[in-house]
Length: 255
Image (cartoon, rainbow, N blue to C red):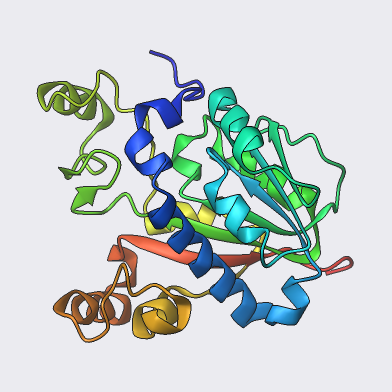
């Protein structure tokens, strides 16, 4: 099987893609991180593009904090759902290809790329497109999973992302969770290479240390053993963090 787009992702993972509470929590963490970086008053004047907007729940929530929000996704059924449920004069949804964004250069102050890179046939081409449509010194909110994780979060199978891909296909079939392991995760070093054209503002440690400040205590309860373990890993073995939250800044013109 060739690695094309996953056109029906929202149908394959409906439980998570239509989970309003969970997706709004993710959106609020995005707002908290971006507000911490720019200031809440400033983001209220900004335009935002969400690459991989799916069912539109996150974008609808983001539209409360940003002046203009645009969502794109290759999944046409998810886009139609979003248009029906959420679209308004400050919120727009389009069917679109993340590897060929149909927007002019320097169009957006912020781009969201959250847990998307592993689903795209060519993640480097997508990041080049994000760089192109960002305004100079604009940022991409980049949330990304690490290949070197104990549990693969799409299928909840231990070490699925770590083992060779041909074995991953077999593993998925034996577990009765699919026929083809599509997702292609990168290690920390692979992610660094992927975003090499950007300047990285790393929020991973901030969110782990102070989850309540970023409304991320649904992932890491303050004072819990999970938070303490996560803090140890980020301090001592950063390359083993199961996921990262980076703001990728587009260098200013002339830099």
